[in-house]
Image (cartoon, rainbow, N blue to C red; front, side):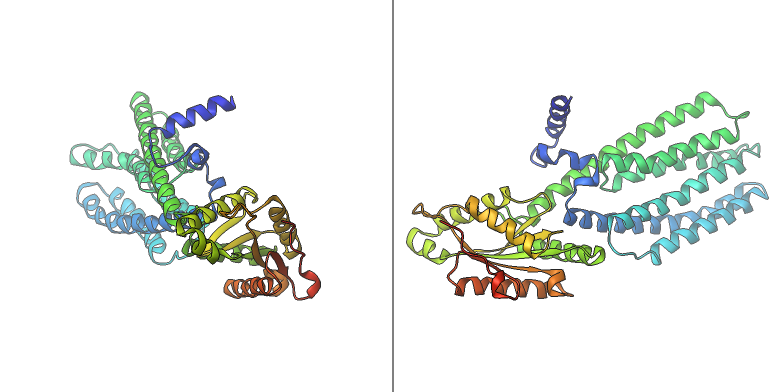
Length: 395
């Protein structure tokens, strides 16, 4: 089953050449494994498009009220007018008042609010319309209300959603269609009703495919934008964004958050003796070796030149030192002359240092990295006491 699942995803990803690799296939199904930076940027895009959708409906919803008043009989026209004014007020609230913190949960909540308004509007208007036998122009206008679910389902195509998210958000609209039919069980033309339901399901599927394709393209762009092209580590700009997010999350949960400032020892000598091309090879191998030894949630950032920043969420300073010592014992790579590559490392923990700003945390780790250099390089320094300085790893 696992092999079949993997093969299926490889074939599907073949339809998106150059955008994703098989390891990222699960990102299209569920947001569970998205990195925090990806989730944050996607949340911002979803919230922006929620406001765009709300602005469109805030304008179009009240405009159609004049058509209803001219064509539909009373009191139906006035009932629908009041319903439209209420919906317009809700759309306006989302547009101007819903300004939450940019998180994926708040983005989901914004989408839920946005699509629940016209969904409820559809159910209520459908029930109202079925109490009248309309003909001529009135029947044409009344029939237009039945197309609202189709518009809503098609609207999902503008959002970069996973397959699971598309199903969750489309389901209430499909249920609303069935609910509206249930209220008028005796008068509904069921063949036409289920034909419309099938068409809605088809539109929902196409919209889900469009959303997944948007997401795949977005993942590819984010991956290219956030990675250092030489080492594959996060670039400094994206690293700062991830660092800020991790810092905020750790502060809210009260969990430890450690950073390690890493500087490759005598790297300038490599460039001077063997050339910059060999220096690039050393940097690439160093980043790959370090990455292979990290936990899934750890993040390696190329801070600049031969300096790297390692983000270690949910572990304190002592645990971070233990992990770094393990990485050093396994080796950090080799210099062009086949001697072991070493590094000077400074470690700081947010809780232990009492930092209120991630920049302060980086500054402390940076200072300790320089302490490691002053003490002879090839070592890890952490904590305020001399006893916290670890011995160099054996070459």
